[in-house]
Amino acid sequence: MSSDPGVPVFGRKGSSVHVQAVLRELVRAGAEVHVVTTRPGDDVPEDLTDVVMHRVRVAPTGSTAGRERALRDADDRVGDLLDALHERAGIDLLYERYSLWGTAATAWARDVGVPSVLEVNAPLVAEQRTHRELVDEAAAERCARAAVGAATAVVAVSGPVAAWAADRAGEHPEKVHVLANGVDTGRIVPAADRCGGRRDLPDSSRGRVHGRQGALHVGRETSARRVRHDATAFTVLFVGTLKPWHGLDVLVDAFAGVRDRVPDARLLLVGDGPEREAVLARANALGIADAVEHAGAVAPSEVPALLHRADVAVAPYPDLDDFYFSPLKVYEYLAAGLPVVASAVGELPDALEHGGAGVLVPPGDAAALADAVVALAHDGDRRAALGVRARDVAVERHDWSVVVRRALGFAGVALPDTSAALADGGGRRG
Image (tube, rainbow, N blue to C red):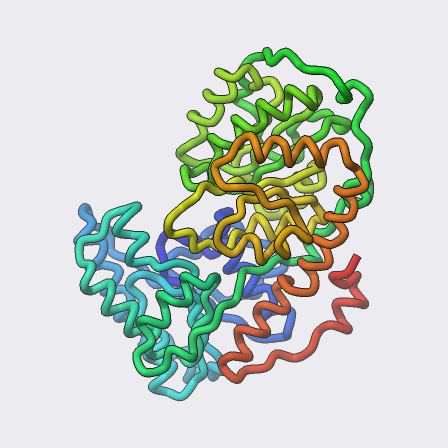
């Protein structure tokens, strides 16, 4: 169940990748999977074409208040749809991505005795109020309490999100569990030619300072398959939506410092968003635009090839008061065997084993970020060691097969063990 109209099930957003990953694990386990959603999306991966989609249409409106009422009306129709599905095929499990106005699905599951898992990725009431627009906050709070209260188990992507959900779980806060995001370590693997970061810098990158000049790179092809690049250049990678809370201003400032000491370095930005023009303009003002490549938004299937171009990947989050994220990008970096430099905020120190699987820097500190990247640029052995440990962490702790099975286990549901089949097909190790 995914009724958030901002999350296309078959889309390119990080939230869409998350939904598809859960579906993929259920399909791999041999389940017949049906999805009830307000927004199906149209980028259907080949391995998910057998998923049966059921669209709940939302009436168009011209106001925020009208939109909220329309989404509640759409949710009111979910129970009848689930009744019909249950009568035809029998529903054994309901797995729902929490949305602002969704209450019917977990209530239906409770009433008919079907186990349910509610996945909570953010404190949506506060998020909607702060970053978007929320008219009926009291109703949104009632919906959150109803959805959390009715679920058999609740999985939250971070400690702060779990605390928020537990406050709304009524008499049973113990049913709320912290479960970080995952990654498909079969789809995302280390690049064979990078060998965990052992690639040496070209001689031209050693020991000289580069005068930062160049013109802004705009109008590039957004497809990863067609972007021109220098395969020998030391490449710093950022993947994600270009939004203010991702620290992109700090990243560009830091990369200017990297270019002073690693003159052939390049910055590869994968993703799009409202900060695009500001980020590229900042690069131009610093004279490093010729070294910044913006690949734009790409399909999930194109991400692995872009990860393979990187030597170091970054997650330069600022020091946010309410950092509750479990960034998918970081787990993708780890799965690709990339050395990661990330801000020491939220769940990131734990994800990077407090420095064992990556380098942590103070949030908002461009100089520290630049120093960490430069140090890795000149230390291939350390990049290699971090890359190997990163891959191990991804496989052992964050593969979606582990995450989904743990989530279902909290609700008393076990999936068949498909590890032997995965090993026969190439497995997730390596």
